[in-house]
Image (cartoon, rainbow over the protein chains, first blue to last red):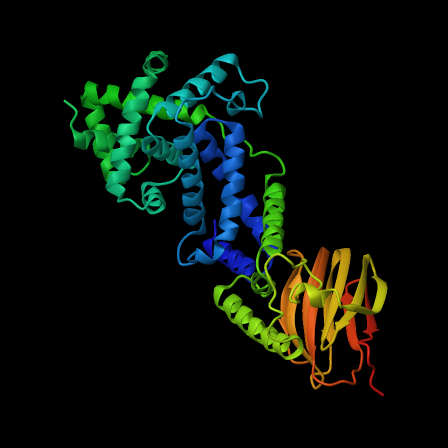
Length: 182
Length: 261
């Protein structure tokens, strides 16, 4: 994604051209929605988080520093929203069935179960560990990109990621053994 | 025995972050170390399982809903906020410009209001409508008298424009609705009129600019605008409204009350 283009669109919004915000929404809605969804495990909450994130980003556009990536900036807004919601909710909610590949009605029951188990295990992880796994596996960010995004040293990213995998592996022990024996 | 360094090497391999020589060294190690092999297999399996979780499409019309939220919030802010906020918003959201224009506009309006209305006519936050008379106090707003009204159609854009007057202030309201962009210009004699403020009901205008002789912006969608002009002299020529788009051009004059010879 071209940050120069993002910065130009943000600048146009600041000059009063509201339409310039639409390409930014369409460019980032999928990744932000998916990260939010994996963080909170609920379709409706993820939609609210994505909407609020974009609305807040628009309101605060004059605080965006165009020397940095727009995505990093809006991601932090989104993650704050997600963490606030998690903090408010505290208790776990039933897993949203729409988390499981709503686009593929022919997906096998086994694949659906696997998806549910993984999402359930992700939700059991502390947010910091959940976040790095989501960024690595669902947003496909590199260590360097995660480090910039989370504003922590790369060493911390790696450490969180290893621990997160360790814990996720323990939570999915049975599945891993089943898969390993194939 | 797998140490912290080995664990790091394995994780980096799974993430594609190892250098080619590190990957080669790891492959050699894996060939002769069953424990490393098992650990590597487990991490690979975990990554494979995570990869089976597909991305979910965001809800349809999310972007549309976001833009509607923003529109609503802007409208509410304009309705709730002080007239200075409204003026600031009208001149864009770049902080320096916003404050500069807001301050300049506020100063200009303040001077005119003092000159024409006296010191007891300070507006309050609760008695303002969105457009017409927004910068005027309630008592004065009621005194705005309709001077002229023009209805028009330019291509697929329909609209109307009115001029209202209260003493030394003229408020020109323009209402437009259409699917194609239209360039709007309100032109006036700089010797007789001074543009004090421009307001809009939403975010349907961009490229807003003003000079000593005109106010210009590009309109798209359905929106309302108001220009507040201070009058320098008693005998006034009409204002000129020009709308121009890909589908045509239109000019209308708007009477201001006391026409000049």
